[in-house]
Length: 223
Image (cartoon, rainbow, N blue to C red):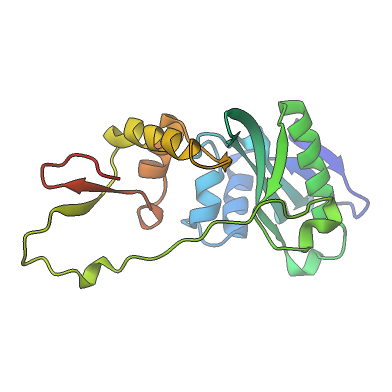
């Protein structure tokens, strides 16, 4: 059954497990357009570790409209040499007209119950500092930093020893080896297996594919 509970407000808390295509589409629309990166990426088995049972929504029973949502993404985190099963909460959103009804608390509690059944070692939120303190979360490790590389300004009329190219499915095992290398340098990492790397490379919408490789002049891996 996809119905988890009926809330005091009369709204239905559900998972998308066993639901028809229409609620899936409403979930995508709730997060933007039908081709939205966020909504379409995690619905209906598109992501390698997110199944419909891990997509939780609050639905208006009369209209079947999705008014609040939460997605539980299964990840592996490594603390030194110990691998931990982690549930990462994402796509947290409530329609403005339905806020202050305790919907987010109901969804987070349902996610915790689901994580217990699945057997997660940890629950994490990569979200707004302070907001999730009401649900028992606190900041434990700082988030990393990133930088943008403006490749369009690089001149191509000279001999260049190294080049940047988009990753392909044949690069997954190399990327796994990079994860293993990085894990030996840091206390906490989030390594991906080949299945997840292949999704990162080819499963995301083209505009969200962020994996590139540095190779030398004969095509050998550099980084």
